[in-house]
Amino acid sequence: MSKKFYGDPRTLHGDLFENVPNQETVGMTREGLLELYNQYDVNIPQVGQIVNVIYVGYSAAGYNFEGGFKDFVRVEDRPNEAKYLQNIEIGDSIDLFVVSIDEDNYHIKGSLVELYENRAREILTQLEEGTSVSAYIKEMTPAGYSVELHFEGVTLAGFMPNTLAGINKLYKPDSIVGTTFEVMIESYSYEEGTYIVSRRKYLQSLIPDAIKSLESGKIYIGNVTGTTEFGVFVEFNECLTGMIHKSNMHPDWTNRINQITPGLSIEFYIKEIIKDKIILTQILRETLWDTIKIGQTFEGNIRDIKPFGALVTLDNETNGLIHTSEIEKSNQKLSIGNSIKVKVIAVDRMNRKIFLSVV
Image 1 (tube, one colour):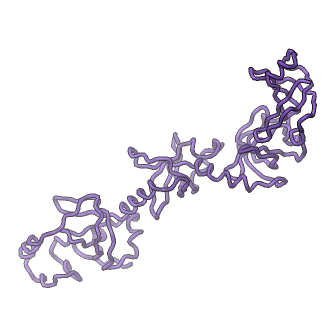
Image 2 (cartoon, rainbow, N blue to C red; image 1 turned 45 degrees about the horizontal axis):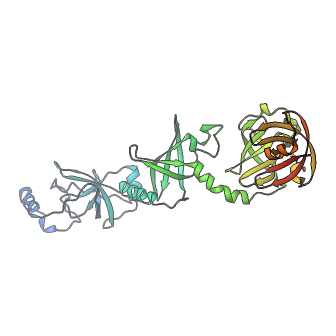
Image 3 (cartoon, rainbow, N blue to C red; image 1 turned 180 degrees about the horizontal axis):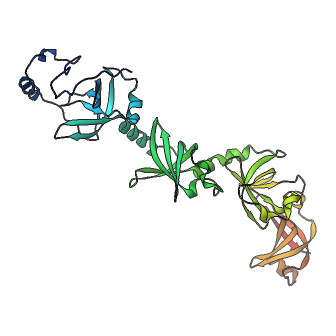
């Protein structure tokens, strides 16, 4: 767009009335023009009002718009405003947000950015549950991340707390700086003028479909998020987390779990999915849990004794429970570490629980 320049309409000199109605005023004295000017009733806009105006040209003050007011509504020639006005032509009608009015000199300042941002904010507050928006991670702060939300063609300020940056704690927190991904709105901070957003909430919304897409026998690659004495937790497919029990780990790692650190890339298979729990393995094989049936008897070891019963280890990754009622029936005194012969009386596969009786 070529910017056509116009003088200040109240300086009353130069090309003030060029291409502007009321050409009969040309040639009048300054005093005459002022007297004529003051005879007209003019509308007075209010700060915060949205006004419909017509573009009449460009001046040193910026983009000038006629709205039937005492002065043009002016939009400063700043990059964030200019990007919305680069294709505007004289005579085009648009809406502007009235930012301020200088009563002394009567300058009216308008903005397209404020208009679009206000509209975007209104829409954001009415988004349906589960709707995501795009966010650019600008920088880290002690408490989280400063972000830019890109929505409805405008950029809004946002903040993402550390705890909401992922499904699990990020092993390398600065790894997401400079990236763009989807987030969900948690709330709006009126004090800071920013949106509180959550990547965690967005990723959680992906879990049901991600679980449905999993395939047995397929090799997956993920990153370790943490370890325990009995196995490692792995994040994969962007939003899923599963556990590899030490008995299902590759022999090279079985006795070196303490050397596995967060962020380590690891290959595995899907072993089993119980509700929302994903059991992983690096070894494709059947275990006792895969074949156990009601009525089978086993030799186990008492791992722990609780108020509700005794926990019995049947193999490296399979445990069963002898309920207190079954212990009372047996008239036996059980101690941690003792070997015991048990019988399977119930299997709850949905909750991965095995119930035993004393033989």
